[in-house]
Length: 144
Image (cartoon, rainbow, N blue to C red; front, side):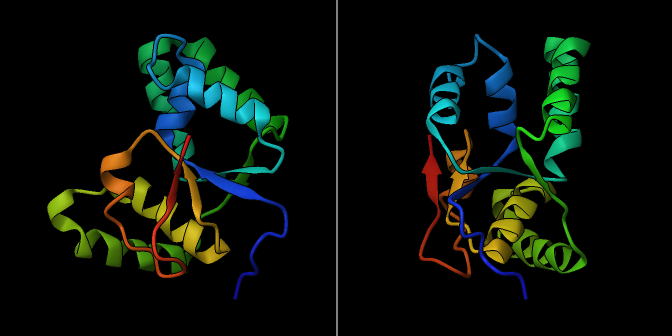
């Protein structure tokens, strides 16, 4: 069983990864401000990385995608690899919230947060993350 991180931690979703890079995105300033102020661990589930790279490359170009990879290499974010048990939990979430079309990446963000006992998600997606009922807390705190 995984232990909770003792350092304050937040899980990042794909929308935040994109917003941090796109200065025209309405979430850019609040996201950058949060990351600059935050002194804890910024955790990125492994499933978020390819989706983030795809969006960055498609809409902002190769440089933006490379900047994300560079930030990951420099350990500006902590990569949390999705486990087999996380995938099993994703199946539950996908089934339980089929009407909301949650998707694997968002389900994996939830599964990783549950496993690590993290209650805060740095996200632009209020629609999906506000309806999911996590197993380890009454509701997620959605930031910024």
